[in-house]
Image (spheres, rainbow, N blue to C red):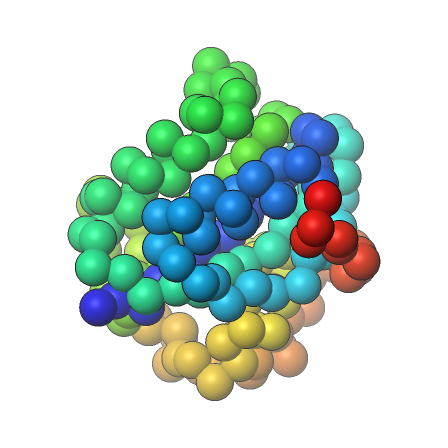
Length: 162
C-alpha cells in the first residue's frame, strides 16, 4: 500500500468540481483525508480565482494507474486538454507524492509545485505536517514555515453536502 497525496484545483464552477473530485476519488479509493479548501488567485495567468485542496489516501494502484485515473476523472468533468498550460481548469488533479518515490516518469515525483505554490504546500502541511519531503528532508510543516513567496491564499468555508 502506498500513501499518496493528491492536489485538487478548479476555477470553473469551483464548488461543484471540488465536490465532484472528492466524490469520484472516494468512489475509487474509499475514505480520504481532506485538507481545508483554500481560495487563491490564479498563478501564471490572468483568470478567475481557484479553489484548491489536498487529499491523502492509501492505494495499491501504480503511479501510472493513479495518473491515468486522475486524467479520466478530469476528462469526465470537462477538462479541456487543448487549452493553454496556464489557463482556467474545470478540474485539475495532480499526484503530489507516492510514498517516498523520486522519479521523472511517468510523472515528476515529488511534484515541484509542492515547494513552489502556497495553494499546494499549505493544504499538504495541514494534513501531513510531519511527513518528510523526499528531496528536501524537511517536513511539510517546516517547508510551510519557511515559505517566503507572496501568494495570496485564504481558507473558505465549504459545504460538503451540496
